[in-house]
Amino acid sequence: MTRLTHRTFVTNASVTETTEDAVELATAGVAGRYDWAERDAAVADFRSRLDPALANVERARPGGVALTTNDSAAGTWAFRNCPNGPYREFGTCVADGGVVVQERAGETAVVAVLVDVRIATPRSRTDLTVAVRPN
Image (cartoon, rainbow, N blue to C red; front, side, top):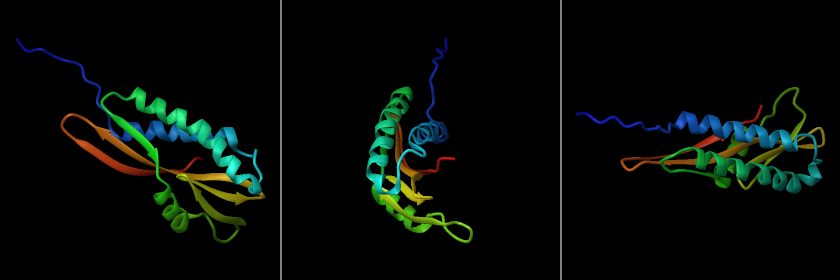
């Protein structure tokens, strides 16, 4: 007799999608609330919203999911991808603890979060870094 078991598979796409949702919610909580001079406070507020959401993503995914922000990758992303160009009167991007912020119309805007994702099972391990850009 064959015994069937139900397993929930964790995929890169499902973890990334849930992480994107967490970033979107955390961004909505700080959007338009901080001047550029208050960017450190904006990032701290953002992190206070994001960190518990990332912990919830980890707990909701069985089989070993770990999420951490990556400041080094954020600095590289900010240097290479900071939104600019014609018709954009934005300031420079600054990476702070894996969070990329930019001055826009005198306010602090979260433009990206770089997250290291580790998915581990008894047979494999996947490591990737995703750049999540809130809408």
